Image (tube, rainbow, N blue to C red):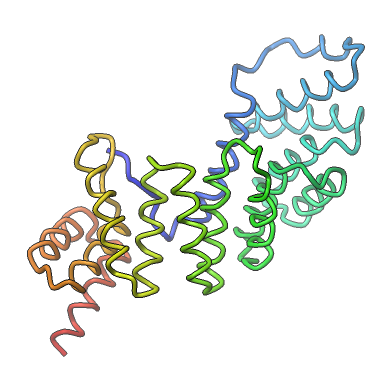
Length: 274
């Protein structure tokens, strides 16, 4: 079964995976084996778009050399093309070249400050570099684009950056907005439940966590993660619901005995006995 959310320790991988998912969804389709036709395109803009599509497809497949080749073609035709520059940034980021990645992202946004997808890529890069304040600002700017198709994810990322800045109330606000825009995503429910626990609003946290639990129980494709189990345990302990706590703790111990969340739970119970 798949988890409702990647554990907290995998947030960097999640952010990078999100970028790859955005690319794949934008340019869905198979990679063609005949590339020479693009050199004959009379319309330069269309040729650039086709090269970026090819580069994106190769990048999503892990074929970085072919991706680089098509990006070079696109940028030779249009050096300031924002999608080509942003995709180059992701390629450089994937290859472990953060300075080159940032340079490409910044060039893309200088070329078009309204290119929201590029701003999201840049925010994800900054988050991965643990530059949370800067990432927060990029996600905040991106969230203002009411025409962007996946605003729920933007607000979710804004919430994560706000949490890392210690701005819990801002995180709660962002997660609530993500939930309003994407009601059926368990990640938003878990994030909001966790942030509400941290602010001490256990009543609201309990309501949202109950919705998450209902989704897990109804769907065979969903299961609890260590993070979601620990959030549920903390809520159950607050309300002295010891049966619920024991049930969730048993799942945590049996499924994820080596997780950081299980170690945190053992510390939590050790404090009771101390």
